[in-house]
Image (tube, rainbow, N blue to C red; front, side, top):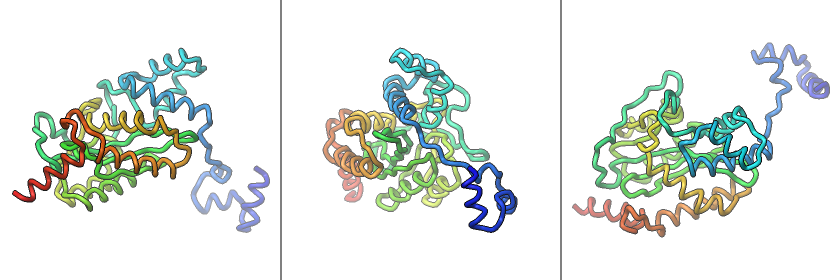
Length: 281
C-alpha cells in the first residue's frame, strides 16, 4: 500500500489525500483493487445454476441445504450473495420479486388471455446467468413468442442495460417491429434507455407480474435448452469461445431444432413461412 501511495504521489506531485479531495472521491478508493470471483465461488455458482434450473421455486434456504447435502460447507448468507450476483431468485410469488430501478415506470401485463397467432405480434426478452469453466457471463435474448425464434442476443460480463438495448436495436433493425414487447420488471427493462427505444417504434410494453415466471415461460424454457444442450456440455473457458459456441447453437436452434409445440417444425420455418404468407396477402 505504501508503494502504491508513493507511485500516485510521484505521478501527480499531489498527495493522495489532496487528489481524492479534488476528485471528490473517498481516499480508500485510491487503494481499492477489483476482486476476482474465487474458484470456490465459481464452482458453487455453477452448482446453484444447475439446481435452480431443476427447482426454480427453491429459495436460498433450500438451495443451501442441497449444497450442504453435496458436502459443501456453505451457509445461507453466502448462497444469498451468490444468487444476487447471478441474478437469480425463487419464482414463487412474493413482494419485490423483480425490482425496477428507482423512479422507473412499471407497465401492466398485457398478454393474459391474448391469442398469439402470428410472428411479430409479441416479442419477449430476458437475461440469464451463463457459467463457464473459469468465470461467468450474462446472456440477453430477444425472442418471437409465436415462432420461438431467437431474433437477437448479446453477452455481457455485467447485469447492465447496454446489452439489452443493443440486442433490441439489432432485432428492430432486422425485422418488423412487434405489436407488444414483454419483459420482467428488472431495472434493465424498466430503464428509460430501453423503454425509449420501444416507444420510438410504437411498440406496446408489457411486463410480467411479480413472481410470475410463467408470464415469460417461453424464454425460461429457452434457458434450459441453451444450458443443457450446449453450455453444460462445452464448459466454455473464455468469453470468445462462449460467443462462438452460442452463435453455432442459436443457428442450430433456429434452423434445425424442431419444437414439439410447433408440430416439430423449426422456429425459422414457422417465423418465415408466416411472414411470407402475410406479405403475399
